[in-house]
Image 1 (cartoon, one colour):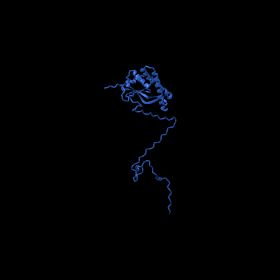
Image 2 (spheres, helix red, strand yellow):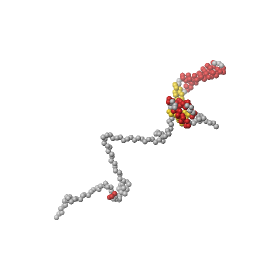
Image 3 (cartoon, one colour):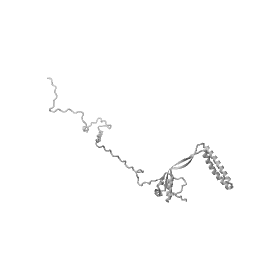
Image 4 (spheres, one colour):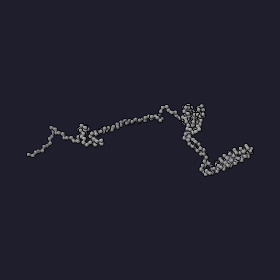
Length: 261
């Protein structure tokens, strides 16, 4: 039975596993961090550098012309001719074959390069180099040694750059999931200026009276055929008209009409 080593590369594509101990903006900074762990005798086979948000970048290096194409083709053909000429020199011992092979190789290289460039019809008149870059580079470590790796990176010189991954808080704090936000402070009421009259308090309306279902319908209209007793009438109800008061003893009597004899 075969045993796999901790730092062995899996044969099939497998997502990286581990706890992130640091994050860096460039690959060189992440490489310096791993090198610092290795210098401090840390088991770097437990560490993985993971690039996130991968992008393909094509950097343009210059303009492409027939002259540059011809020079590049002749140079590559000359190198191939030199290799063939050295093989012939080893078997024949004649040095003239070397120069002849270099000339023939340079000529064929120049011809093939110019023809290939002409077939493109000017669709790609520049040279470039392609690279795969990431927005950030994280360092993962096995969970059982993640704490030791963080302690070592904390002693890393400040000039190395990078951002350490913060440790998880033991107790929930504001801004973390599961924590209750604090109540918002209430602003105190502004004080009135000195000498100003107090603001009058609006009068409180009396509570609305609930109609008695015995004398009124649910819509508030009077119920026909039901007589409300006098004791149930509201105290503030006033009669529509009052009778004339009786004349007193000293009051002037109205004139009586005379009877005919």
